Image (cartoon, rainbow, N blue to C red; front, side, top):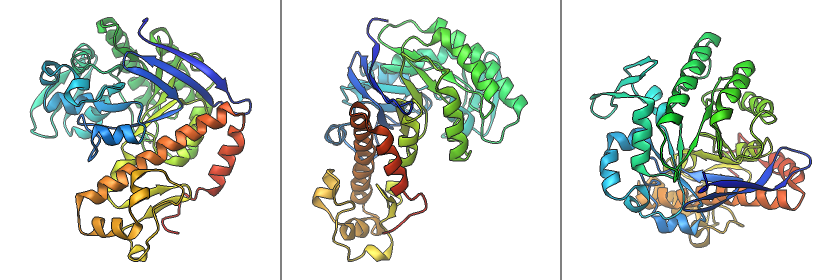
Length: 375
């Protein structure tokens, strides 16, 4: 597919970290990268201008949610997601498979697809791999995901084996149904925490991975150490000359640890979700700004942060907004949290290119307190 290509610029000598460039029809993406999530064709509370200002290179939207509302045909009539939401850079759409399995209380799975009820209206729907490709083609994202079955943490080996079988079957059908050369289809490696299954899934995906591959079924409830162990296992097995996308992971420590294990792309709703709850990311850990200790704290969230929020507002003011339930509070924290992760990805890339990534990673993790909520 001539509209897409990926080149590795530099690899860390001591870890699996890579710096690269993914070329797409809507622009180049410098990796490693974090991707803000715009589930409903919007990153909650932020304008496209805000995303430009924090240097977002690519954003995500979700097939399941947009299929239910406003409907993929409406988006198609608008000219696709890029025009619908006024975003001229790359877009990735998740297949919606995770949402089908996690949000729908009533679902029936067979080899043909999934019958489920909308979490909005209770209306019954049936999605096949072919239908999923039709929806994503109408949405018009640059990168699309294969329809797959994601298993939860703690599932049995037999459940994971069955999900792998279905995922392979659906991938083959997605690939056959995928027609447009302006969209790149990423297969998704499943297998839960079972390494033999993960290896089999990599082999399942390899023939269909033309310019990218995704890692699914992690960060679904397992310990971080378990996720890192699976990533260590997968790193030498995955296609080297293609970007690797770890789905649904977005805390600062996980970004650094993921990049060190050969991951190039990550996304998560976490930075905007915790912003709405009054929590900020910092280099030292999370800061719960709604706490009383910050009522007369007139420092920025983080002294050396270059985001709009930290340049113009104090902890005391943002705390006031959050506790007064003013929407600006969540907006300002969302800007800060997303910029923090995008800047972190940029710093990791700089460290890889400068041959000091391992020292950067070790120093960052040593100073990042996963239990810290105030300082």
